[in-house]
Length: 459
Image (cartoon, rainbow, N blue to C red; front, side, top):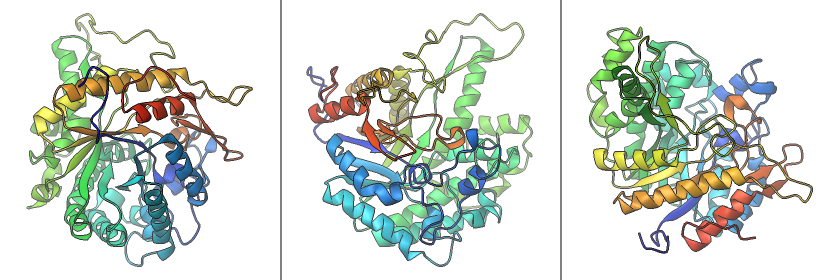
């Protein structure tokens, strides 16, 4: 990197959202019910009984949101498409009004000189497929291929970057193992089935995207915290290995042709999985899953410091920072920018991807407008500043890092937390739908304008 803190000229600065979190219009214009519609409407599942029925009303207000993106100078916008809006039953008849919405959105972005980065699946499965077994059955992966065909055939001429899945680890483990996300299942065997069928869906979609969008790049978005042992004790090191294995390697290894890691297979069997659970992996599946990709997206927020609850464990050597808003978000996620650098360099040198994007990165703070209407979210500004600096170190190490997407453009429906957590660089008043640029948006606008790490906020 140069001494003036500049990024490469072709580095892409963007922001990210997800369909269920911002669109609203949950039952308009022929859209089918999704598993998150069902889950959020189930009493007790979401804090304060919130739902994504309206969210940020992006379905109706997307032109206003595109203007915001243009004002910030974004080069790219990462969004997800709603499967149930395109195929209300998950397969079969296509809903033309759903396709038309995404066509208008993409055309609006292109007119504003903003590159559309589309993600096909960000957790919202058509409820009709959930009723058939969802990701626990192989037919859902096959239905996903039909969905990928339908939308890429319609938009493949205009969208030049496609991701198949967003965070399959969350869909599998949060939705089917811990049961805290849709569909709310707590079953290790079903979770493992879901993990494989998600990856199979990815692999089935890749050649279809390449066929319908031959000039586009195709990839997948994975997430993991930076797993670090709290000490060098055998117990802590093994606990970190387990966390890294289940949340990271279980997904990235098969995508890059290594198959499922055998240490994780042993771990999950020890935790109660059926010894024959790998029978769901049929001949040819691993080859399908490891179809060559143009990029991998990495979502990073924090590190996970592993401390094994074992009697006689050695003293803890590595401590998190002092608990304060400067160091921890309101979700109690630690601000640990070094973890982004460590994670990106590890992925680059261990798996050799052609290109890496940071597809999500951000922090939750609920600081709202003051009496002058300004949102002084200084802790989020600090978070972004530290992670932009970490990316500079990463580029200097030779990592093929091509872009960064702040999470999120807008305050939105934050899954099981409802509207109680705010990740946006734009404040959303959910009563009036008024948007207000936060100081973090002004800071990010300056980073984009200078294409460099900056300290100040320009108005």
